[in-house]
Image 1 (cartoon, helix red, strand yellow):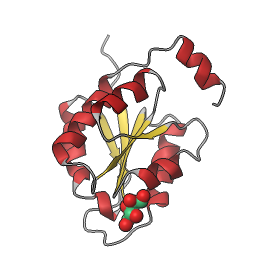
Image 2: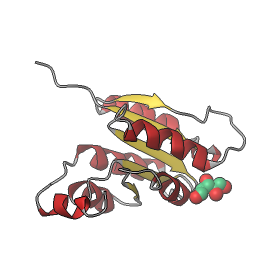
Image 3: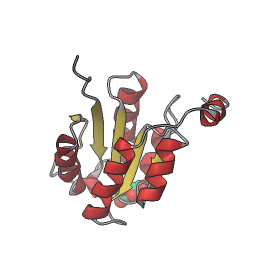
Amino acid sequence: MSAEIIKVAIGADHAGLELKPLIRDQLIRLGFQYLDAGAPEGTERVDYPLLAAEVAQLVQNKECGYGILICGTGIGMAMASNRFRSIRAVNCSNEIMARFARAHNDANILTLGQRLIGPDLALAILEVFLTTPFEGGRHQGRLSLFN
Ligand code: RB5
């Protein structure tokens, strides 16, 4: 029996479009499928809440197992996607944040700031985020208090 391939939704506003193709390539390398919700390369200006909503809904309705959202800082994407029920989005600027966001908080959306971190760090954060399992146990009890 082959393991099911997890699909990851990705989205970026104009300030995240340089990083988005690198994220796509890294997802393939890591053995995930992706669903690119936009914005299309070359887009001059687009409001980040629109992309956050697209990706949050793909994760919320379980069409995708995880979401990755990129904007200038990652902050607006986290704020906007966390408005959706059952979304636990986290803005990570290092691998330790990514590890604990998954292990303790079962985060399902990672947001990245293209203007704040370089591509190598972004890809390293992505890998940790997607390969760290949720520990469950006492952490599940805590999530149940707000989900
Ligand atoms: C766009 O200029 C910028 O504000 C946006 O990408 C993001 O950083 C918002 O949080």
